[in-house]
Image 1 (cartoon, each protein chain N blue to C red):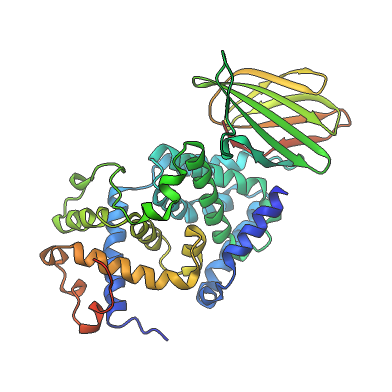
Image 2: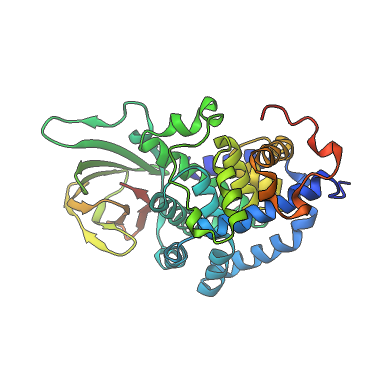
Length: 227
Length: 156
């Protein structure tokens, strides 16, 4: 039942994500090749998969508001799950989706065990700024404009922080972002645009600095809803 | 179809900067890569996998607090007719484990962590191990007919 439910969850998460296809084919094929080599016992191929995908999984875990220790545990558990299922990945081309879905599931498991599920899962919590997370690490950011951007980001509703955090880690595929968030793929683009707009609203125009980041066209400020 | 013009290009530029900031503020610790790479060495090619099917810790009110003991959690694994029912009792950062294995004759069972292999005491088809450190573990069962069985990894 375990493997069946994994596979089903995986397929469901990927329902209707064909829009992400095409462009990613080359990457996917390379991933499938590495997976086959790892399955044949090649540690170097495994290491390559790990190096390639761990940063995405880290982002998914951190986007679920796990602290560093829990996030590290979740990523480790995800890789152990892949080791367990190495010869049984149904669609190697979509390994990233499988990993992301598994990571999300392990995050929820961790949150549930520590009784934080409602906090992180309830829709109402999504609309509140994330005040319980660790304090701003602005000191780490030498660049003042980056510090301002981070400060503004931390004021976003949790839903936006979560989505943008994953979107920056997986820039090219809404399909995987969808799997990481369990959100319909069709709503990723509009939500992302809305969250970026809110981020822009929170930023002092001077902090945007780079003129390229300032809205230059009238239509870019339309329809952005609540601020 | 979307030429990434106008607000699309602006969004991409802002995302690029945000990516840079996130990488500075929250870099992935090196240990994450190290433990992920080491996971490959824990592969058990010859062993059948008993998958996690139920974990009381994930159910409402599923963790029982027994008087005089710590919290008790029940975790079930299955493969075909074989089931492993693992009872985990918390004592601070230590865990007492009792595993009931049914559907197969057990010769020996071990508790495996990513770094250690610990023996269990076997009586009939019940394997026990006390004072195991909290963290990731799985049960490795050697059956009387020479088969190997491992459970999914669980964090206890």
